[in-house]
Image (cartoon, rainbow, N blue to C red):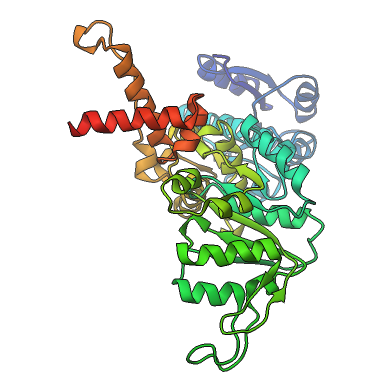
Length: 455
């Protein structure tokens, strides 16, 4: 590991040699007895931290600090003085100093201060690189990420943004399906129209029908005025049907007719009302399986699934976790009025290792909580939720040293298939795609495993 490089500006040559000898085992120290000479050395070489005495002939330590902050803002400066006072400390901090020490100081104290300064510089560099990656990463409106799976999503969204064809967005809970729907609306030619969203699982069938299609005056108790419904409300824009897999079966034929005819019949009304809205539906359910089990109409499935946008789970997006985390840190820190610039290396490792069953929504909650709890400029492991800190990924590795662990190939395949199905929340269509087999083959295997278990 390369030792940190320290530049010392101190007009007492004996003090320079003393500090150099004390720090040399763990740091490379270069020194100059004047501020101007130190600046010249810094301009031609790379240093991790600068230590400057306050009172020197010519340029003093505070002026040197200000010059370094202006020309090399990435290099932290520690100001040391034998004349410690509150005014001096304030002047140093205002000049941009990272820290302030008063003579006589303990060399170990100086070493610890320099260690923190070096870590601070490394963190700022990592944050700068990560922010640049956030800015340069492929994105579609507010949909952020740089993984291959997300680039495929962006490519698809770009191609269909101006289309009026129905879109079905699928993915686990928390993957950002509504974010994608809103992004499609903002990027498309209907962007000046309304974006109207409804959760199909949030209300009973009668109320959902009235919300979608409207109702005539007197259609039911308390219907004192006519309401035009969300299909008509969304005309000129986009209607987002969230959790469409939970739409009651009895209402599905009416929805199908509305999508086919581009007209709705209000509850209790005698005529049909035309509408002009693009429909985007979303679900975390396996609609193909629901069709086979006759829990979702096949004709409606094909009507809403003209363009399919599958969103990958966060655990399958690799380094996107850190890109999203940095984006969320910037957002929540600004909102909380805190100076939090990034993640510690160990915290980043924990975020990458965790499985994120709640996907981006869970990551957002995790970062918001960490910002609220942290007392430092970087989020540490201690700021993360316990389940993230203590997470240990499951493993399918078997020990060859134990004969009992040498399993038949069929059993290895069974365990792996069940693990994949579990990792995608039971979505058999997605599992079949990940496994590289057709759905019918996967269904037969799962049925065989279930029969074996029940036998």
